[in-house]
Image 1 (cartoon, helix red, strand yellow):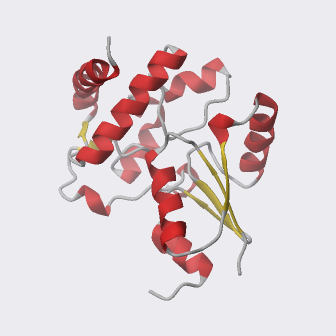
Image 2: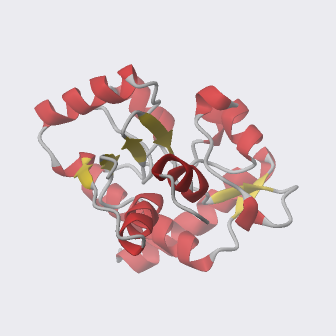
Length: 84
Length: 108
């Protein structure tokens, strides 16, 4: 099983859709709602996202070594090796 | 002012700002209502209707570029996607907005 981690906002429509995608496909995932963590934690997340090439748009999804910024079910499925 | 009343006010204000920039509000009612509600809540909490889909950093120069409608600060990126990052605004050329996707800025 591939490891799925995502950074999201608790009030972002596309973050909700992204979580829905993984739940509907029964893919376990970890997520952190950026707006709900401490300022110190937010700074760490900013650094990590920047290092991975992100520019601040949520959702920010990491599937093993694949980084996918934005709501993109086709790319999630590809990275997960899901059959269409 | 209630959140609902502020949503309606923001809807009017945003459409007036976006129209001369070549954009219109989305026809996706769910997305329209959701984004306006989050922006009205951001305004109530933070004093400013920030974008509900992008990272606020507490760096004023950075964050002010995320005040909705943020189209002028991300023109090249949004023109390439034919929408803003949230999808609240869609380029006036677009007929079927359901086909539009979020594309990271570095890929446009």
